[in-house]
Image: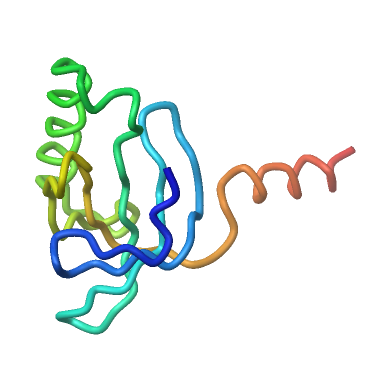
Length: 109
């Protein structure tokens, strides 16, 4: 599913996809209320009818929201919009962990 250009929760305008994971896709979005960029993690379509995956996704959001540390992204919001489950979090700009590790190992070799 391509969400680019869509608005979730009447608040988050999806700009572009920035990554994929096993359970979800992460997008860069604009928070239309606070006028800032955020990351929106969206549960993959194939898991939106699986109650166990939905429970895990919600538990992840609740657990992450309790953590406060400079090296952990902040959770801003969580919601469901027309069957699309999402978590809104702080957007960190820069290299991905994979790119950083690849560059580091490339220099060692």
